[in-house]
Image: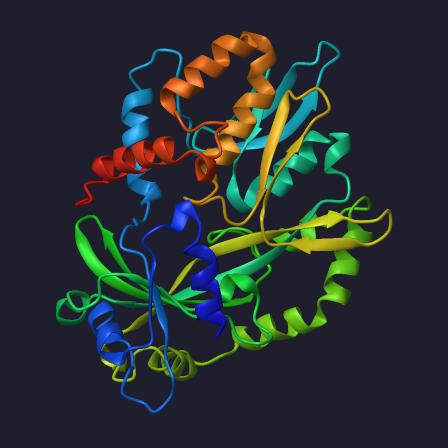
Length: 368
């Protein structure tokens, strides 16, 4: 009944035009051949034909190829930010350590954007801006079961979501995906969320401890105490066995064999802890941009700024940091040329919606 109500609500909107709903087991079997439809349990599924994953590694490489042709652009790897401080003229001094050469240099910048994943909270704290007071991170580990068996990967051609368990966090809603990475198909099932002290996959077990400061200890303690059920769930999942994780997969795909599936750590999510109602704090599962008062520094916090939020987040950063500097009209015309749907409500503009969708589908190679 939940799924049917969801379908009925979404199908009335322009953005989800074409969504399908079925309780017919034969139809569902065609949509998702690996899914269990043989049991006596009722089953329902919605289907939307068009969708794509974004391989951010490949996208980053392609963008770097383009940007590297610009003489004003450079990339510095194996560097660590030691300090960030604002001068009286409102510019920023960054003390940067070259790890390979063991050298430290001072760089001055007019604008800083911090988009360092799990390390963002540490760098934001180094900036010492007023608006970062009270912010902290709640790290969550993520694992997936991976299958690269071609016999199975050719049978599954979609992303299928279920509902998260009663005490499970929103980000642990189980899904069985087909991913194509470097031209090779693989299936992924998960995520299996668990507690961790690390903010990065290759980070330190002291990451969480080092992020606790006098200015955020009350919000952090409040969040951990008020979310004991979540914390308990994540700790239990940390010691959950491979066998139990395979059993979770079998609720989707009953004939899954252990020889075909390998457990891999995907990475870390650092959820936002922020001050709330003067005392205490709250845990957020979204994405947020924290600014300095003069808009000369911006930091992207939260999980996950993936395909669904990345463009919106960065347009927000560009708009608030550059609009006043380059002129409102000039800026807006440039953005609208790149993204015609910018600042438009597509749900209220059918012709623009259709034009935008068709352009997107052609770019992604979908058969319309």
